[in-house]
Image (tube, rainbow, N blue to C red; front, side, top):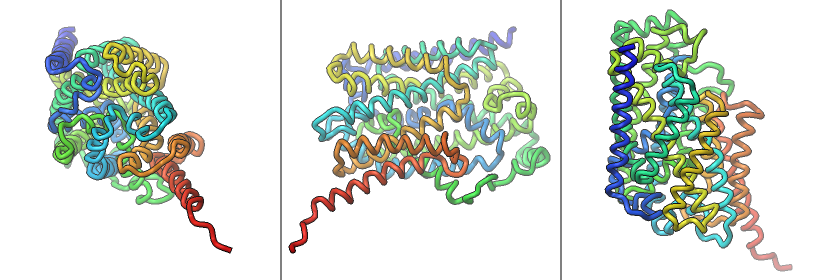
Length: 475
C-alpha cells in the first residue's frame, strides 16, 4: 500500500508539473484564433523539435513498439530505421517549404492549405471529415494507451484512465491552445527520454549485461536474435521500403504538420529536424531494448498476458516506487502529448474548415475543442484496445488520403477540385483495401500502396488534361 501511495504521489507530481507548464505558457498567449491554432508562428526550434518528437512517438513507442520488439525480437529494428529515414526525408524536402507556403497563403490549418486557390469548399469539407475521422481515432488510441498503463500500476478500470486522460487534454488545450501543447510536449519529451533510458539501463543490468541478454534471447528462440524478419514473400527490400514510405507518411499527419507551420522561421526547420531525429532515435532504440529485455525477464507475457504492457510491468518489477511513478508519468505524458495535438487539429477542422462561419471566434474555437474531446472520448470508450493497430491504421489512412495532395499544394502544382477529392478518396480506399480486404500489410505497409494510388490518380488526370489541351492535328 505504501508503494502504491509513493507511485501515485510521484505520478501526480509530474502531471501537476506538466499542467503548470501549460498554464504558464498561457502568459505568452494572445486571445486570437491564429495564436490558438499556430502560436502566432513564433515557436523556437528546440520546442518544435521536442514537441514533434513526443507528439509523433506517443503511446506507440511506450506500448506498441515495446510490445512489437517483445514479440518478434531484434528484427523490429527495421521498422525504426525505415520509419526514421522516411521521416527525415519528408522533413528535409517538404517541411521548410510547408512553413513558407502556409504563411504566404495565410493557411492556419491543413485543410485550408489543401483548399488554397479553389473557389468552392469541397476540399476543405472532405479533408476536414477525413481529419476528424482518422485523427480522432488516433487520439482515442492515445487515451487507451494511457489507461492501459494506469490499469497495470493501479488496477484502475480502463474507463477511468480514459476519462482522466480526456480531462487533462482539455486542461492543456484550454490553457493556451497549440502554444500550451508545444510547451507541455517539450516537457513531456524530456520525461520520455529520461524514463526510457533509466529503465533500459536497469533492465540490462538485471539481464547480466548485453552479452548475457543476447544469449538468453537466443535460448528462448533463435529468431529473436535474427536481423532477418520472417514471412516476407516479396523479400526484404519491399518490406523495408514500405516502412520508409510509412515514415514519409508524416506529410499527411496534421498534428505534426502544425508544428512545422508554427515554428518561428522556415530557416530553423532543419535545425529542429536534427534535434528531433537524435532524440527520437534514442527513444526508439531504448524502446526496442526494453522490449527485448522484457522478453528475457517476463517471458510469461507471451502466453498469458499482453506484450504491449511489457514496459509498465517491467518498471514495477525492477524500479523503486518513485521511479515507477516517473515511468508511468512518461507513458501518460507521451499519450497525452499526442492526444491533445490531435484533438486541437480536429477541432480546427470543425471550426475553421467545415463551419468557417466560426473561424474568427476564439470562444467557438474552444467549444470546438470541447466537442471534439467528447467525440474522441466516446471512440476510446467503445473502440479496440490494441494501440499498435489503431495507431498504424490511422497513420496510414491520413498519409494516403492527405499526403499526396499536400505535396502538390506545397510545391504549388496545379490540381482541380474533382481530382483533389478523388486523390483523397482513392488513397484512403487503397490503404484500407490493402490492409483489411487483401490483408497484405505484412508484405508491405499500406502507406505505400495508399500514397501511390493517390499519386497515380493525379498523373492520369494530368495526362488527360494535356491530351485535351494539345493542338488538334490539321487535316
